[in-house]
Length: 59
Image: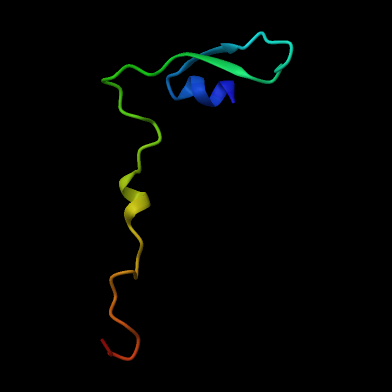
């Protein structure tokens, strides 16, 4: 999880909490001018066939 958050521009560290050893502490987010790495790409929006007319010409 730390590697994913770091690659997205977040700064993280271990929570250092004996009751929650698996948690991370998020210290800061990506800079405000940086586009998110999880934005939808143009090739993800193209879905061939979704604008085709109905089968049999009805509609």
